[in-house]
Image (cartoon, rainbow, N blue to C red; front, side):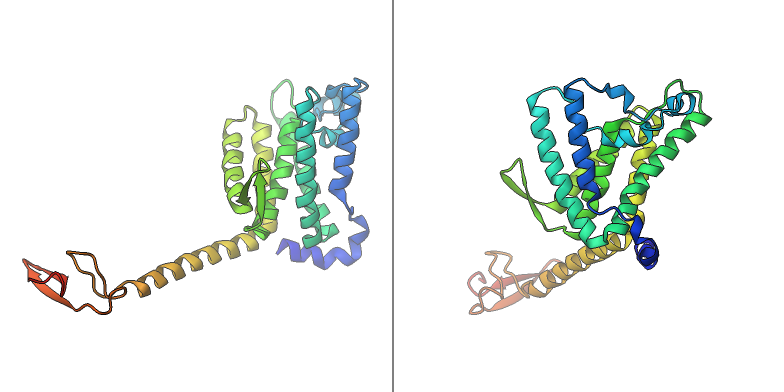
Amino acid sequence: MLIEKLRSIEPRFKHWAIKQLVLYVIGLQALVYLLLIAELVPLESLILIPSKIISNGEIWRLFTFILIPPAVPNLSVDFLFLLITWYVFYFIAQFLENYLGSFVFSFYCISLWLGSILLAFIIHLTTSATLIYIDPEVYFYSFFFILFLGFSVLNPDFEMLLFFVLPLKVKYLAYASAFFFCLSTILTPTLLNQLIHLLAVSIFVLFFYKELIYLFTQTRSFAQHKNEKREEEAPLHTCVSCGANSSDNSELEFRYRKIGNDLQCYCNNCRT
């Protein structure tokens, strides 16, 4: 319903759409990565800290926290991790943008950004905590999560190479990702991080609830069909002695013998 509503107003506001939004994010994250390596910019100056925005007017923090790369420069393995993450990030984002359209996709992404900022300021203004800030890793994880889940409900049988070796369907990766995301939500030490996780899930469900319902009903229908087919294919007679059945052994004759209160089936080879 939300997607249809956004598409209905798209002709009037399509100039607000940011085409290739994730590509810009990746490009700016790469630039920030280089600046951090060169120690030209301190990481702390990029993090969204409501108190510093209010007291010092550091407005840039409203934007720079989403540009912090998911791996802070440290070892060469971090850069390899970044390249893989950015590739998958761009791949799934490109598919979602093509499916939703640039306007709806931009709204999908910006909802998490604006919602996270709003949560940070609400908690800062309503609690006595000394330092409230948005953990950049938590934000990127949540951002990646809603894109990956959106991709997985639209392409549940798409295969990805786990560790570049093991082919695995996206739906199974999504199950694992959802499990660890829920676990992370429970174990994260701050209320703000938990709320950002819950916000991400809410945005995903709000946008893709129809696809989730369809996927759930399709799975149930498929399971029901398999059970019905299994019942239809079940043999009518099965010998309790040798296990031969009427489906695989049409040449045999089956008779029933009452033993106690039960009827036992025997084939002509086992009847004595």
